[in-house]
Image (cartoon, rainbow, N blue to C red; front, top):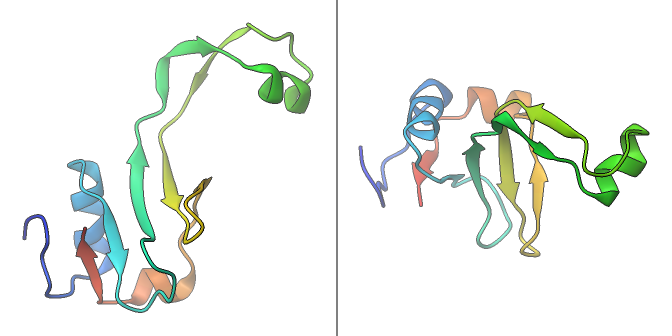
Length: 97
C-alpha cells in the first residue's frame, strides 16, 4: 500500500509504513487533517532550547540525544508526541495520507 491508500490496514502495517516515512491517519478519528508520523529523534544530539531547559533543569544549549517517537498533527494544526490507545492498536482503518 502506498500514499493515498484508501483500504484500511491494521496497526502492524501502519507501524511498518510509519518506519518507511509515511504519514498515517485513521478513518475513526473525528478531527480534520489529523495524522501521525515517526519523528526520527536526534541520535547525534542537539542543543536543548529554553523550554526543554526549564522542564529538565539542564542549562539551555546542553547537547542531548533524543530517541525516535510518534508525533501527531492535531486537528487544530499543532504537533504533540503521541501514544496509541487500545482502540488505535486494534483498529483496522489506518491509511496513508
